[in-house]
Length: 312
Image 1 (cartoon, rainbow, N blue to C red):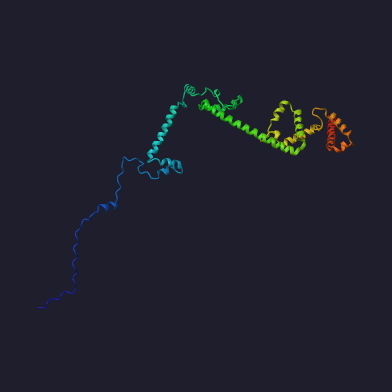
Image 2: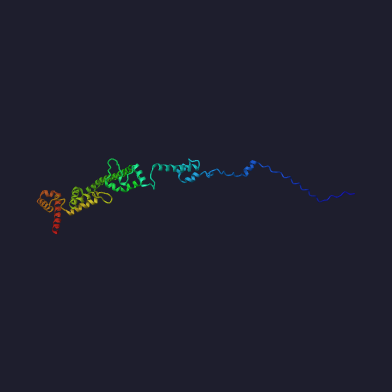
């Protein structure tokens, strides 16, 4: 019997059996790194436990001084503690000072003032000034509003004295500066007038002062002599004013520089003119140019005076 013929169609091999499930081996170290678990918050920790490291910079802002102070503190609680301690010091000082509050009774206020050298009223301050300084009645009147403020703030006579002493010292310094400037202005004005008037400086100066004495009452003259311009310059240290006054004096009395002060102007001029005319044609006349100029001035002055006399 022939051998059987093998089937040419290959038979598929059987599928391998699935491997048995193996439990994974967990590395405890690797597992903790790969999948961290956030620790539970500590309920006893303060709210600022997780505060940013730059909390000092955030609080201080651009103030370097504040930042330097905050750098001396390890945590915000030190900042809060410092604040409350400071407030307590202020409160304690205020309480220990005994300063009456807004609700103090008149009796409490009077007792406090009596115990601390504060007068009963603003006008009762006892002022002590540095040597050479004197508080006049006019000064007291001017400073009355200041004393009101001092008294309302319960400041004593010692503080009031220091304040008034400083004020008086400032005034004295201002007066000294004004005096020094007056001296400089006087020298400067005289230099300009001497250059402008030449040899007539003293004559013009005396002439204008004589005019003011004749035209102004004595009490008005004294005040006018101390008058000042708008910029503080003494009026007689102003070159323009002095020149104007000299011109006015010549207009008022054209014989002022030709005859003695207080003399009869017309009569003195006529006598002077007659004396000079008697010398005309002589060597003395031709050699004395000043006499010739004075003669012409005398004639002009006499003409003005006679015209005024005729019109009056």
